[in-house]
Structures are given as structure tokens and as C-alpha cells.
Image 1 (tube, rainbow, N blue to C red):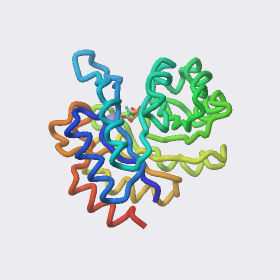
Image 2 (image 1 turned 90 degrees about the vertical axis):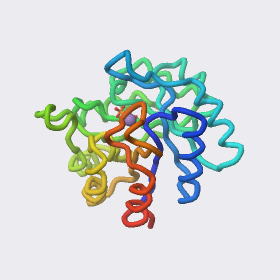
Image 3 (image 1 turned 30 degrees about the vertical axis):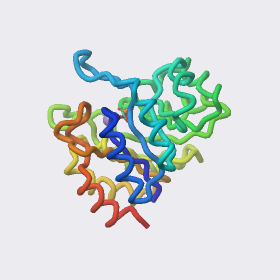
Length: 232
Ligand code: PEP
Ligand code: MN
């Protein structure tokens, strides 16, 4: 299975190198990790532009593609020499100004489904990404019972989406699972629907992660799940 893995956010130089060397040992060459972060609470971690320098240094040692979210066209320009694949996050799926202009650098784009968007809206918004190599990413949709789970799994939408489009489909098992203990079964469930790739968040010390601490796998959990169900 094609796997894109990495922390929710790159947080420090030490954490950046720890994650990248860990994934490199497993042979994973598609690495994600946020630079700036969208947070509902403005008093929580907002990201760190120093990530760009850390990734540049890491690329001198390790061979990998770097996936990161862009919020606007300034990010597309400023991240150009470091980011290989742009991610348009759930909250920006409807941002047609960004979608129309993102292809200035001709890089592949992961378009995440807004957590309240229909599949039709996702497919229609992907049409704005004219000229880009696009992957559609399902990442869980708004739950009817947010006090119990913020998002619920939408991997069973993959077969419907496949009837609507020929674009490759990624399933983000971390945001859709909300908690790390659910990730393994989510991967198994999603794989029944044969997505083209799976996105997974991991962190050397999830309880102390600066964003999404509940859903990120630790290294031991990631390694055992990867070896058991993902590595062939
Ligand atoms: C992320 O990938 O870290 C993220 C914020 O995802 P989403 O836009 O799906 O919430
Ligand atoms: Mn995250």
C-alpha cells in the first residue's frame, strides 16, 4: 500500500529528524507534516515557518517527498523550494481562489474533502485544479454525535467516489479515527475499498504533540501496524 506518513505538525528540529529517520528506516519516502496549522482556538499552536529550514536540511541526508498544507497562494510561493506535494486541507476545499491559482508551480495536489461536503462538491471543486495532478482525500465527515466522536469514517464512500471520478483516492485514517486506538481497524476497513493510498499521522511522543495529540500513533504502534498490514 502507498503510505504518506508523518506528524500532524513538524514542531522542532529534533522531532523533524527523529520522524524522518524513523520513516526512512521503514522505506517510507512520502512524508507529511504541517508547517502552519489551522486551529479552531487561536491560543493553541499555530505552526512554525522554521520547518522549511529543517526539511531542507533533512533533504540533504534523506531521500523523500515532502507533503504539506498550503492555506493561500503566498504559501504556494513561499514553500515552493521545499514542498513537493501541496495539500489543500478540509477547511479550504471550498477556497476556489486557492484552487484556481495553486497550479502556478505545477506540483501535485492532495484535495481533502471538507468534513461537511458531499462527494459531488468534492469532485466539482477538483475541477478547479485544472492542469494539476490531483488526488482526492477522504478524511472523515462530521459526526451526528460530536460529543462522542468529532468525525466519523467515510471510507465506505470510496466505492461511490470511484463511480464519480477516475482520480486517485487517498484515505486519511488519522483525522477520521479521532483517536489512535481506532487507526488499525480503520486501515483494515479502508483497505476493503481499495484506496490508492493511505495517510497516517505519527509522532515520537503523541501525548505531548502540539496539535492532534489524540490521534497520532507512536513509533512502536506505527511500526507494528505498518509491518502487519501495510508493507507489502
Ligand atoms: C492535517 O492533515 O493535519 C489536517 C489539518 O487535515 P484536515 O484538513 O483534513 O483537517
Ligand atoms: Mn492533523
